[in-house]
Image (cartoon, rainbow over all chains, first blue to last red):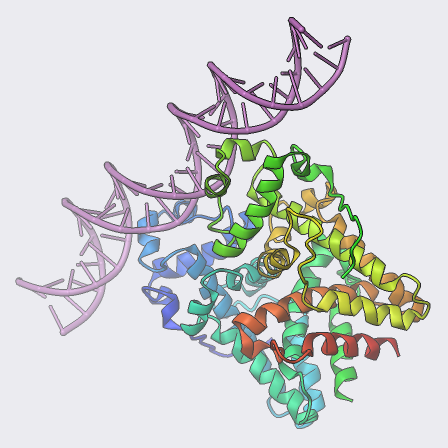
Length: 222
Length: 222
DNA sequence: CAAATATAATAGTATTACTATCGTAAATGA
DNA sequence: TCATTTACGATAGTAATACTATTATATTTG
C-alpha cells in the first residue's frame, strides 16, 4: 500500500460546500460511508445521517444537494483513489504488458484500508461501490450529469487503461469495451460471490476474478 | 422471430394476484412497461400508473406488493422470454460451438417486437432491463429474495449457456463468470453506447457488442 | 471590533408508499 | 336461479421522505 500525503480532488460540481474544508463536512463523509454500508442506499437518509453526527439534516444539505449527489461524490473520490493506485503501480514499469497486468490487479483485487485519510475508510467505501454505484448512472438524469462531469473520474480510469491496451495492440477495435467490461465485471463478480454465487466461480479463497480478467485481456491482446 | 403460442411462466411469489388472469392485470403490465420507460423507475409510482389505466392505486396493490416486485416480475418475464429464444435458437443444432455462437447472438443482439403477447412489448421491456434491472439485485433484501427464487429465470439462462461452454471445454474453471460477464457486459455496453459513449466502442451502426463477446468467449474456449 | 459565515434548532410542505374501509358489480357454484 | 364469494372503484388516512425556510447563536475573518 502506498503511503504518501495524497490528496484526492473531486469535481466541485459535486458539492455545495467542500466537505473536507470543515470538521462537520468530514464527519458527513466518514459517517455516510458507514451508514450506507450498514443500511443500504435506499434506506439511507440525511435525517438518519444527521442523528449519527448530531447535526440537523438542514446542515447536511449545505454540503450536498441530496443523497444521490453525495454518493456520486463518494464514487468519484473512489475512482480518483483507484487512478492514484493505478498510476503508482505502473510508474517506472517499462513493459506495457507488465503495466496492463498490474492495472488489472488494481482493478480486480480487494481494496484494503489505507488509514491515510482519516475521514475515508477505503475498504468500506469499496463495499459501497460494489453494492450501490451502478445505480448512480442508471437514472433519467445521467446525460445531464455526464455533461456536468459527474463521471469524469471513472472515465479517466477507463481512458488510462485503454491507452495501455492500445500500446500493446494499436489497431485493436475495442479497447474501451474491454476495460469497462473488466471494471464492471470485477465489481459484479465480487457482488455475485457474496449474494448470487451461482452466477460466478469466484469466492473468498480463490483469486478467480483477477485470473479470469487477466486471461481475458491477454487473450484479446495476443 | 419465433411465432408460436408461447406462454411465459413467472414465479408466483412475484405477484399477489396473477396479472395475466384479468384485463386490469394485463393493463398494469403493459402500461407499467411504457411508464417506467418514459419517466424512469425512480419517478414511477403506483399512483401515476393508476392514472394511466384509470384505476386507483389500491387496485394495483392487489396484484403487486410494491413497485420493486413489479419490476422483478417484468425482469423475470424477460429472462424467461430470452431463455425461450435461446432454446429455440439452438434446438437441432448439433455443434456445441455453433450453439454457443447462437446463444451469444441471442444475449447480445437488440430485442425486437414480437407482438405475440398483447400486454408485453418486448422491445420496450428490453430497454427497461438495460436501464433499470441492475438495481433489482443491488438491495439489502437480495439474499432473502434470492432464497424466494426471485432471480431464478436469470440464473436459469446463465446455467444453460454455462452448460454449453462446459461441453466445449469440460475442465474450464470459469463458465459462470464467463456467461454472467457476457450478459451483464452486453447490457452495460448497450447502455454506455447511448449515455456514456466514451466507455465503449459500440454504437448503433457497428455490431461491436456481439463481435466483442463472441471473440471473448472463443478466446477462452480454444 | 464589525461583519460575514457556519451551525443548530425548529417548523413546514408536497409527495411517496403504503393500509383500511366500504359499497357495488360481476363472476361463480350448488 | 339465487346466495356468496371476489374483484374493483372510491375514498380516507398515516408515517416517512425529501426537501425548503427562518431565526438565533456561535465562530471566524478581515
